[in-house]
Image 1 (tube, rainbow, N blue to C red):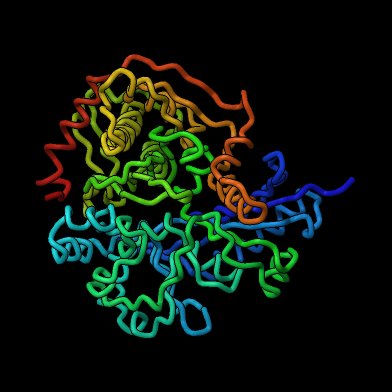
Image 2 (cartoon, rainbow, N blue to C red):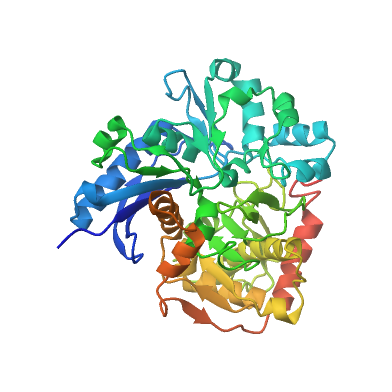
Length: 494
């Protein structure tokens, strides 16, 4: 029996790499290979050696091939979706000059504030890039590097995002896509190109940057002999431009021009992320106005503290993550790593409303509530940026698609339902970033719109559909009141 045509979608995240083998004809998931990453740093620093990402990609592909039992020659295309915003600087041989600064490295908060002021404020940035610099944005990290490691900045022969670095290892071509590029801080969503004025402001030579492909599904080259040998795949197969992890998840969900528009998705992982594909170019200082992988836009908001922060609170309390009840009078804002949305990079966790009768389980529930309210406030901003009224009944009836590790947790799901009042959909496929990357690879190898491909691959009946419950406005108002009153004097906001 002949082997199916197979594509590989790679999800290179903060903590690990997953390589998912997909039957390009049916969308059937044939195997998943995994390999861990190493993240180091303290006091706001978060760094990884990019060479670890490449080794993890090779290990994950090998594990996936072994699990599937398929020969490498069955694979026809590959694409990488990577963690956004990380800064990789390369020497002339394409080797990293230093560890990459990751998206959740907050040391560049002062540089972000200085860049915002230098261009004339948040509105000036959103008009050009769709986003205001914060510590996570790559431009802020480049400025930090120039000031704190000037030798590496001066010696850089290439500047890449994490997914760009891996794609270049695959194809030998320096390429990116509009989606991931739009998270750099030097790409204009207004013009669809690198912004010369911003590059001048950053002291960054455009020659150091990869070419921007039309979409994440564009074939930017073929797998090189060296990469083929390292991966156990045939040389010459299609390599797609790939994209950022959030853009790829949108493709995997069927969000885009050939699918659903203005439908929000919440990713509950290390970070809490909300996004939607839209034809409306977002320009809200409260959001990241990204480009999508398919030619639409992807307004997005990201909070730094989500499942990892709540798990830390559970560990401090000596509780299982599911051993939680509503917080009662207690409010716990679990901003353990600072916060990105709202922009509070120097914030720490805040607990208030503690009483003699407050239980450990309530404190854990309050941590869930604090994290959930933070990401749901961003959801309302997102819906507004799409031209919708978040309070309109027809908008409130629009389901929230929950993805990420938190979507598998009972308390996370019920907390989001209770505080949002929206119906909830939990997609049956748990590897949406890799699935989206596989759709990009299939499009590069054989043609077709990647969002349409991913939609066709979705298996009916595998999604969990949960009806809305009455919204807990009392808890919502209590948490938002604390957040608004504490943002300036306590949490460090302006």
